[in-house]
Length: 406
Ligand SMILES: Cc1ncc(COP(=O)(O)O)c(C=O)c1O
Image 1 (tube, rainbow, N blue to C red):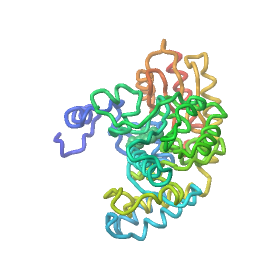
Image 2 (tube, helix red, strand yellow; image 1 turned 90 degrees about the vertical axis):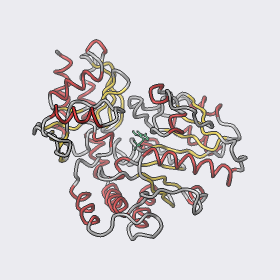
Image 3 (cartoon, rainbow, N blue to C red; image 1 turned 30 degrees about the vertical axis):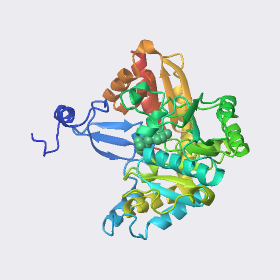
Image 4 (cartoon, helix red, strand yellow; image 1 turned 30 degrees about the horizontal axis):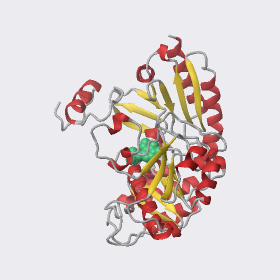
């Protein structure tokens, strides 16, 4: 078999991968060839229940029919003009997304990390232009154990040594305080603070839900101290937790939403910074941009995604089935599971290390046809496509119970 032909067997495909693909991931030995709804089929025809949903980028299921139809139609019209010209797709997308968020304006980008970078730039510029912080002296308060992406600036305020080591020098201007501790956050804010940047529920850290009063207190502090509250809803947002945004659980509205992943419908990279005019209006021509940001294909797909979210069906389904998912996972506490955290269709499951590492449990689950991902040693995360059924959840949890019983 040559590299030009798709490998048809798992071992061949993985051998080619090991030779030609940079080793910045450590994937499970499953080689996807096609997918539909909540299911992935590998190169040998074996089917797996996807309980990861591409880190929530496939919230609406693999190849959601309306999203795929939009993509097909747009492929036959125009896919990319860059922002050098207008396209008839971008403004309707931004208008619809702004309305979904209750904000005025949208800055479209591509990856989640780019949305975070862009949010940081907007906050710094707002600090200079609006708050009056001297240029180059601002700070942004972040939470310990955050995950916001992989760029040089973003890893500069990460606590994950594996993500940081060897990549310095780091970008200054960030202060890290414990997640969930509003008093520590209040102490960290000074007159040069332009923003507080948080995941409302920390995802990569293990689906950490903050104390009930935390986000309302963060919101109040940001308002009192004239600081922008930036909610990174790239993984937590767009129906995953049973609400459009995780912040909705606490009736908190941030100044800036950072969105990505599911915004592109699992088809294209599409991210966005969403805020009111008094914030996003600080950007002027030439100050920020992206060749692919807001391209017609992504904008068309994003518009369909926003239409789907505006209907509310996925949020309701995630809320209802999330109760079932958590109830079933909680039954395993004391039977190999130490703790279950999360909201809606998002669960962090701490496995008792006597049963093996998270990676070992993930491998055993994959053998049984269930795909999950480990994080932080012994935590498994369940974040299936939101089209999953109650019976499929039961089957997946039964597989975990059997793996832990052995
Ligand atoms: C909360 C959060 N922010 C940002 C990112 C980065 O997104 P991307 O991988 O698309 O750059 C992620 C990715 O997992 C994330 O979970």
